[in-house]
Amino acid sequence: MKLDGKKVLITGGARRIGGELSRSMAAQGATVYIHCHKGSAEAEALLAELPGSGHKVFTADFSQPGAAALLALQCGEVDVLINNASIYARTPADLAEEESRRYFEVNFWSPLALMRLFAAPERRTPGVAVNILDQEILRPAVENGIYAISRKALGDATIAFALEHASRNLRFNAVAPGPMIPPPGLENSTMSKVLKSVPTGKRIEPDDLVKTVLYIIENDSLTGAVIPLDGGQHLKNYEYL
Ligand SMILES: NC(=O)c1ccc[n+]([C@@H]2O[C@H](COP(=O)([O-])OP(=O)(O)OC[C@H]3O[C@@H](n4cnc5c(N)ncnc54)[C@H](OP(=O)(O)O)[C@@H]3O)[C@@H](O)[C@H]2O)c1
Image 1 (cartoon, rainbow, N blue to C red):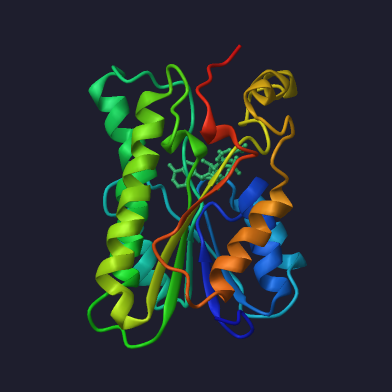
Image 2: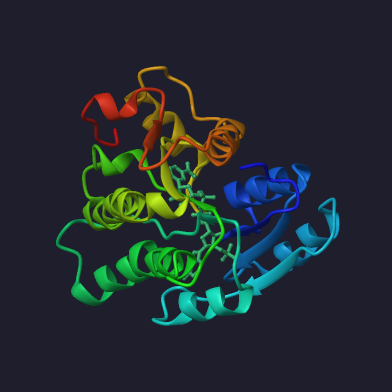
């Protein structure tokens, strides 16, 4: 699919990696629907700098059941869906139930709802969805169990949706990146420790993620792929040092 003239919804599209994705999609001629949660000021600022026209900002809190479905309704049919929003923190596998459910609401149920509505039975046009996951779906870090499971579930849903909707010209793929930029609130020093678990020894450049997403969108033969983009990190066990 060529992006020029297409509508793209990017969740968490206002800042950090999502901001890079929004910029690159607009640069390719797409109309970008920027979803944000707390980043509405950044989203409005980004809106003003994007090339092209028709871009919009939408706000939704994915920890609230039904919020993602409402967002899909507000956006209408889009050609490309990029599920980029997530929450991340140390979340051991025996995390309390209420908090575990919040992780699943944001990291699994909300993107799943967007995928379901993206593939609504009445849809007649081609589309491509890209889920931004994490290499931890393949090798969860110690004490990251709930986070990793919530992202892995979305990875499995990617494959199931790809199979079930391939004949309708709807494609579903995912990227599982390694460390790109430290999570908000964590220092760069954490990154240098994490990099010891990356065989290439280098962080993943956000631009490499953007290029991988563009490759997925443009490659009409690609569906059901979960691409590790992690400098080989998924090839070995690791823990934070
Ligand atoms: N950073 C890394 O090194 C790294 C490594 C591996 C995988 N990833 C994955 O790559 C993606 C982008 O990474 P990132 O570091 O840029 O992500 P991030 O900053 O941790 O989060 C992305 C966006 O998620 C949105 N979000 C958080 N809570 C939400 C909620 N309750 N409802 C709706 N949206 C919510 C936020 O939107 P607002 O800003 O508007 O609140 C935020 O900007 C994420 O899926 C992440 O898991 C990142």
